[in-house]
Amino acid sequence: MTKESDCRQVHDAIQKILDGAAPALPPELDAHRRQCRDCQSIFAAATRLSQARFSKVEISAQLTDRFVAAVIADRATPARVAARWRHVAIWAAVAAVLLIGAGVGLDAYFHTPPSKVI
Image (cartoon, rainbow, N blue to C red; front, top):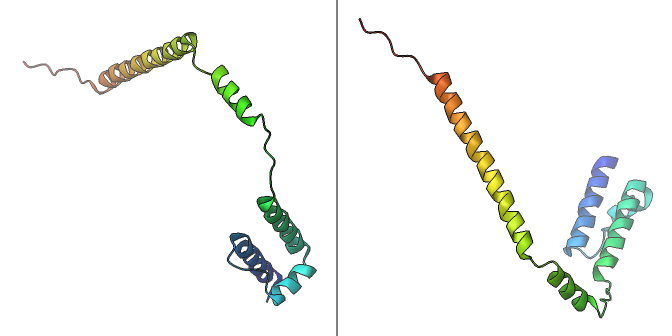
């Protein structure tokens, strides 16, 4: 087998370990992993990821209070709501003007003058 195909097999096996579908690398792939710098690096990163995934994270006791305070502070005030609707109205007017301009332009482009009837 080539180095590339061995590396590909090791990468696939590492992914299976991370997915929980395999307990460890098979011996022949583990032997390649020990000799290949790229595979060592990927295996080390996967090991760190796996350890971080199962580590306990301490949550601050004030997290809920800070979260609620941030939500209350960010509530929409009447001035913010009015400003938001003002922006919507401006962009709606711009869109209407562009559509009308496009319609007039297309009409002028495709308009054929009436033929003279004698």
